Image (cartoon, rainbow, N blue to C red; front, side, top):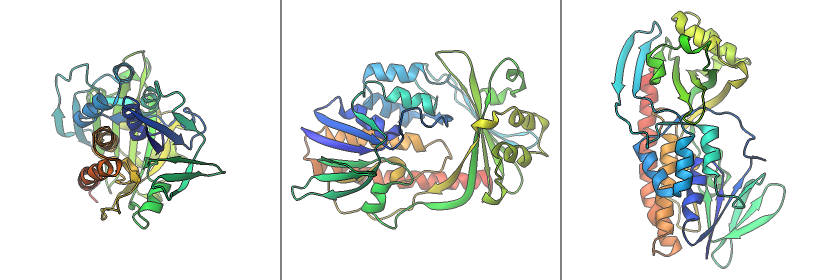
Length: 360
């Protein structure tokens, strides 16, 4: 039986594990987080047609049902506004069937993807390096000691991937010179009336001066009342202070009062920053029992909501190749021939969108 070691229990790694467990493949996922609930940085992830197709291909019916039932109520609008809340652009998506997902909460989505993977996901284990064995297999070493061995190692360990650093040195993502400060405003009886009508329908981008902008999008859970409005401030590094909530308030101090109110009602404990990075196209590495998936290879800036969907496509493509009649290395090579150009084309489109949104 083929044994696949997956480094990283993010969206792509878990979708791959779900797909492989339906075939004759022994897959184990190693995740550095000590528990599934270590990071509570939940925010809204857009799921597009490609992501939906990948989920249908990767997930057993009962897991797909759970992921769908715990997702957000579908929206039907993407729009942009000036800081005075003048609508500049709008695109509507009417009639999205309830069977399709359009948005999920990251933490809830991850827990859904863990369904049925008991014993296949090991938390508190960080893959720090690997080596090929004389038999052509791959042995991983863990931070803090210990090893495991398999036929294939999949680096799904995100932007700081240790697997990528060893497999393709000097190929790390570039800093786009922007920071994103994410936060959430709880939606309840007090805050619901404060949300502009368009903001209730989907993702809305408000463009300010000097490249600053804020995205807003709701998550309203299908399976229980409540939810939140995601707040995503994009700004430059020098404008990010120690108090992230205050940073967002200050950045929008001269904007329409309705915008300032939404940010002021945000949960101050929910704000966290990320550096906007983008993968740089590079030549394929020599074929072998190690490959990459998702942000570990083609790090995606959060424009257009394509990062998670591209990782899901990677999982779908790799699983299909591994479960085919090809030998292992031929299957991995076939995956990489599709994944690399597709991923980097998507990165470049996302970077262009960032430029359009911020004027940079």
